[in-house]
Image 1 (cartoon, rainbow, N blue to C red):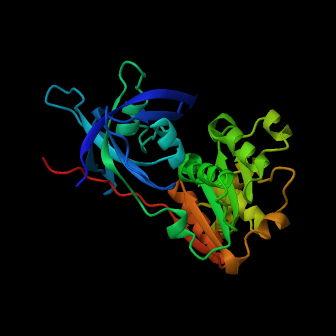
Image 2: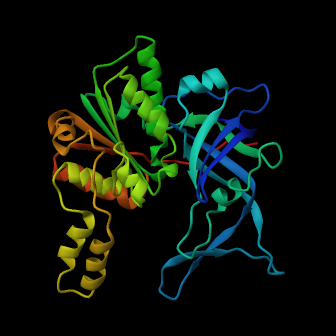
Length: 335
């Protein structure tokens, strides 16, 4: 069984109020285990603001602040698994693991227990993060893309993390003469340009051309300046993928289903508010469809559960194999 260790955050990059990249160094004298791009590790903080599960008047479970007898918020440890966004070669070279994380928010606006604690980190001060000294998961190219000539990766939000690791490792391997014959296409959508996180690095990897790689970034809340950038697309990741395959927006599809029903007006409003998908100007739906021949393609996705469900629908509609990331909490050895 894996041991529990404590590392230190040495770099914290705030991309927006709710999105960050951070680097974790291992416990002194103890390097991180070897791993493959796409895998994950369990992280833990000791000062998380705890919640408890209650059944509401609607009969559904809800999570509310967990208070002690004096009505003070209970604090304690919480662990969760996170995909690693650094490539394995980077960890060998620099010793750290890198993570791309969002400040989660519950249905009541309550921040996620672990991510709220993570977002209070200050390198050099409150910088300790526990981890289980085992890296796990089978969301790797050798497992999930076996037999495919075309690999289409769709990351929504921080769901980019495993794909950033894959792209960086593929580029590094190609620079060392280890290049495969697959075609890789990476779609990534987030709210703003800053939140794309690895945008410039992925553009540079695409431009280098060391392996067959096309990067398709999009902004779901584009500014006028974003719309002028020829390298950026617009729209949510699932809707950009729908656009490539000539499908209606998810909002349009839901509005058609709701016609004549009690939700019709709300669905029609969602269609009006939806950002129309577009591609970076050097790409076209036809050029991307050519990289997604159903008989030779797998779509890998990670991110928002609702978006992943729609991406699964898109894949099934176009008879393309579909694979998604799933996490399990890696437990430490009993002591």
